[in-house]
Figure (cartoon, rainbow, N blue to C red):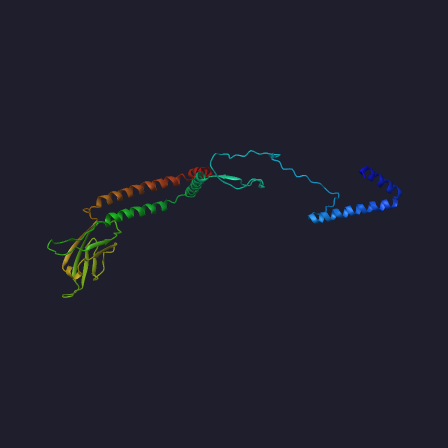
Length: 293
């Protein structure tokens, strides 16, 4: 039988039996659905339920962001950038520090200016100079120069060349401006004793002074001392001379010139202080102007 004949026979059968045909059709559909589900489960696929929802589209692209407002910034002076205090995208407020330049030179200039201000302030405070303080300072400098002149290079000279002794050593700082010669006589305190004492004449006259065995003894009352390289008893019966100042010492000329210079500086400083004192009002005005500058 041909396919056409078979198809014609089936159509005739369906027309003759409509109810049975519907049942058969439903059965065929159910079999098809069941077969499809079984095939789906067998392949491991999932059933998707289609339902209404939002649909999103993600687009990737490149470009350049342009700010709505731009500000060009620059330092008032040129220099090397030392630090940047912010990152790109940071939020900043008015007055915030964004970057800074190296300030080593500026810091030095600032320190110098502050020091100058301090100097001018001191000058202003000191315009009412105290003449007495200037005199005291200069008198001290002159006294120091005089002490060097009168104290350095002092030696004890024997009264006789026959002494076979190391000369006593003169030390200390002479605190007077009186010139002269110490005559020093050394004798035993009693006959046969190993204790000795000295007496002073001429520049200063003093009663007998006990000489210690191992330490210097005061040579008068003006800051000088006398010590003995050998035992003091060995010097018993001798006489020595100490000239103040010692014009024959190697340091005398230099100390003399320094003393004269100290006297000259004192005279000049006192004269300037007296003039400054008389012009105090003018000086204060100038000092205030310099401080303001």
